[in-house]
Amino acid sequence: MFATGGYQLLIVAAVALLFFGNRLPATMRSLGMSVKSFKEGLKEDDSEDEVTT
Image 1 (tube, helix red, strand yellow):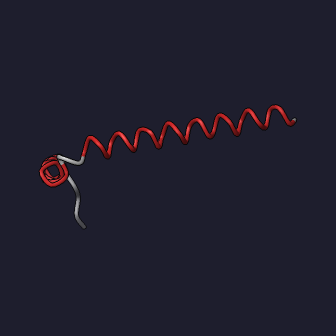
Image 2 (cartoon, helix red, strand yellow; image 1 turned 90 degrees about the vertical axis):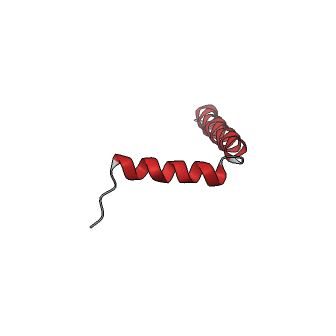
Image 3 (cartoon, rainbow, N blue to C red; image 1 turned 180 degrees about the vertical axis):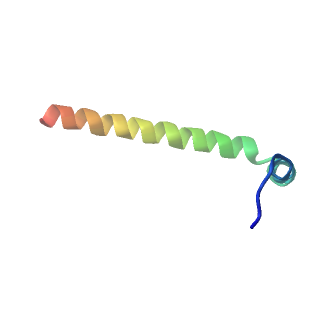
């Protein structure tokens, strides 16, 4: 029914930046640390599997 085009996404991104601009760096930093921790957890799980088999 509704198709999102480039202009609509650009407007939504601009509005989100206006509302959340001051909190955006802290949010992205915590998201990056979460992804890093998740990847480290996956590597630990893989290494445990290799040791036990």
